[in-house]
Figure 1 (cartoon, helix red, strand yellow):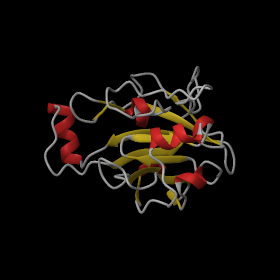
Figure 2 (figure 1 turned 120 degrees about the vertical axis):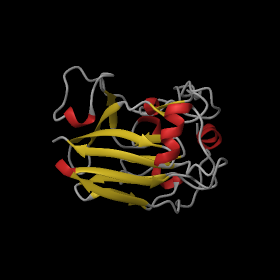
Figure 3 (figure 1 turned 135 degrees about the vertical axis):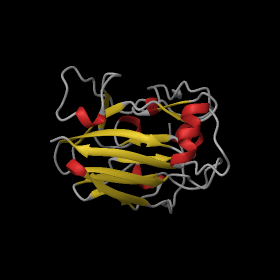
Figure 4 (figure 1 turned 90 degrees about the vertical axis):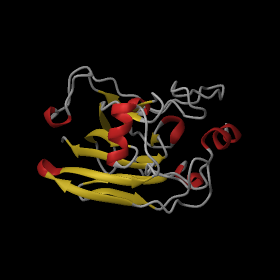
Length: 212
């Protein structure tokens, strides 16, 4: 499926220049801002690859090409696409489960019963592309794709996920995506379905913490 991957995901053979900034809050919770703009609406850079660590979300210097053979990353970001290192996305075993709709990030302190973890399956065995059902062209149906909806802009659903990582040991991360735009532009999108210009699009703000 190599050609299909390159065409659908728009992959590059040099690492992205996008950076990650971490703020540590109470109860070992991080807010990580990822420059996942990828060069604009028509991406010209690789995904930004990263690993969850006790010191924050740490950028991993990888190109898209190398990432498909690497266990050094857990999660990748570009525009509104967040991929995990598993299944069709990479050689790892990083999976995710969406918690129930009424779950609040601050209240989730341990693994919930009945979580259904999934690996990345946005290509079928016959190399057919599985989209994210947003209505926008080209978005893969990743395990975290439901962090947003599209009422005319990228609006946050505030779904809370549990991500299971396996390197260097098995642990679980609770995660919520807070913004795709600048905070003020995101509030406008979520409230009115519109964003001002400039909007700061592609600067993902992620709240996360280990729960074990």
